[in-house]
Image (cartoon, rainbow, N blue to C red):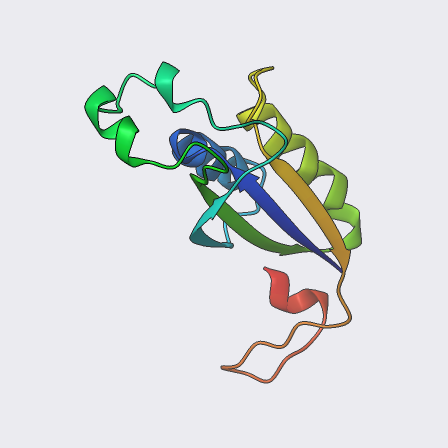
Length: 121
């Protein structure tokens, strides 16, 4: 089993949700997060930012709102999930996101007590 953490743009959430559902991986958790990569978070170019308010925001480092998807998949579905997330989110621009894949020991369905890959359906 693999735990996939994907940090993506908020605007790409619906497209990502649809893409994962279409490949048979509709179960995941999403959380709002703040973060930054190597970029500086160039808010001056963002059309939705009131330019007068920029003077009140410290210059560096700026944190951007993103979404973090948490998804547990079988080993067989790992590459399919990663490829699907990339396809739904890749624009070629800085800020497209990051995918982290971790080894997962087990998964347990609380309702039935079942464990293992069967709980991922």
